Image 1: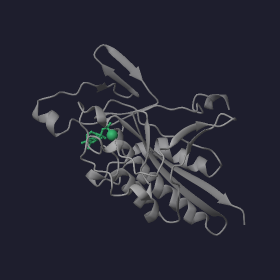
Image 2: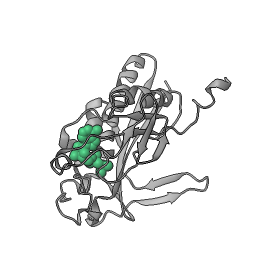
Image 3: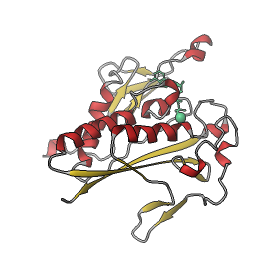
Image 4: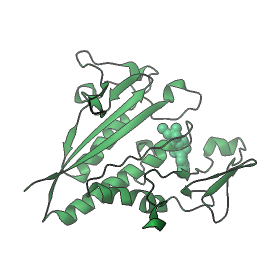
Length: 240
Ligand code: ADP
Ligand code: MG
């Protein structure tokens, strides 16, 4: 199908424009991005940038992001494909909000909670034919250091308000090593993988890890807020 060639590109880029938030409104800030009507395009000053999708502001409603961008990836998992959803942007631009790893807003609308719902709905519908085994891991990269957000031995020991929280190491537990194997696969040696069998268990992992991130809140001038969180779900089909 030639017409589908562009559609089938394996990397898609969507922009999520967030509204101005409290402080910005108080300071009288103005939106710096405008959406070109009817196109997946934004304008900043004299420059136009075109993407696969634009959500928020006067573009498509953010609620359609999941159906359009993520559902095909979740379906792909059941056909043996891997998928990665990456949020990229300046501190404060809404990555945590969009991914759904910031529990301070009590939000369940982010991408990861929705992926979890979709996964378990699908597993439920297949349960008479196929058994699945699920694992999750959740890590944070802060400068050169990789922290295990699901490490049971460091639970409750990280003080989220301390600027050095990311540097706390529990004695006896070596830091996670990023390794490349002979076939080029990148692995994280020593990160906790938790086996989960219910939505509730998986949601608990997301919540627990989100809370132990060194920097839950966003402060654009805070160097230590520049950390990257990676939540990984592994779906394995069990042979019966
Ligand atoms: P980042 O993770 O990129 O540093 P955050 O996700 O922490 O940014 O977002 C910064 C602030 O903006 C947070 O207070 C968050 O609740 C708010 N925010 C982000 N995106 C939206 C959105 N689409 N709608 C409303 N508030 C948002
Ligand atoms: Mg963030």
